[in-house]
Image 1 (tube, rainbow, N blue to C red):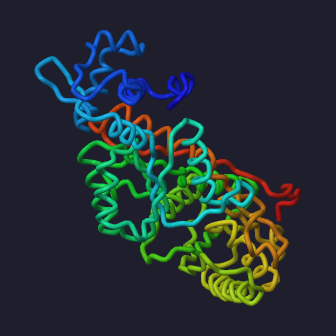
Image 2: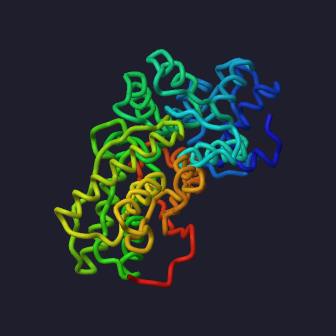
Image 3: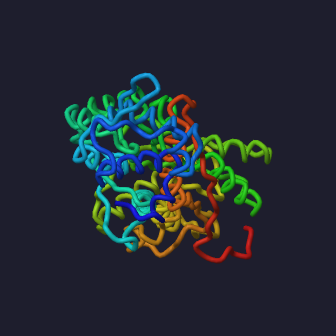
Length: 395
């Protein structure tokens, strides 16, 4: 059971639910007992009457209580109360990724899961993690029956399975809080979304390059993405780039965009060389058609290393003749850094730690306000990071 300090860290509604479940587990209440009045519960737990009523309504939906007029009675046994209490303090996380166990090995999107998990534990709750690739209808039905504290959906690549769709529908129907990370808002109209503000981040990056004298900025979108559909974050980055270029009165250059899915590629020199020669061909053809460029914005930091090597082979000194910008602020852990020493001149930090914390905070806010309030999209601002000193020259 929770300590008094841990209990006070819960939301007011959760404290009411915890108080009654603990009373049942400790033998203070028994199945069939009449519940104390709302006024007595308010004084005992030090919450408002509105909060008590909302908590009691939730317990009635779970069949922990039954009402007879204005009287309420406990309807579950002590063992059932303890089992339900465990799941009402548990966050279910669904994703399709595997993660390292230590913080030092976490980089990129893995940091989001790491800090989300740490925050759940810090707030005295439990974690139940599922993999979306084998999440069946039976698992969805069982999870919904357990009524968890909430559900967080991470890193869903491609269309959701039948089991995931069933889970999302049932969560919306019975009011289990549901939060998604980095998703198209229209995919799940009943889910809150927590995401990095890619439009703001790319606009800020582009404005900085323009402010440093760059005038012909190429977007090099080599995507590590298995779907042929353009991801929502890329749409937003394009919007940010176009916004910054238009306000500066500069030419909107077409982007280089293609898929190269190599998520599990080991760091091999031969594979890196293939990426370099591929980039050489694309950059040479692009500049023959559209003219020279003086800066390249890459889809991620991992792309910048092959771009830097390609620029050098084409006769351009990276970060002098052509400035190279990354995204995600994970250059220090990119495997291709083994083969190219040039770092991106500037990159964008999505603040993955805060994204992980915000996923849990949004889950708790949704639990407080209930399912009646429309789904929200929370966009966190990105920051510029400079992996090396900014050069003095503006060629």
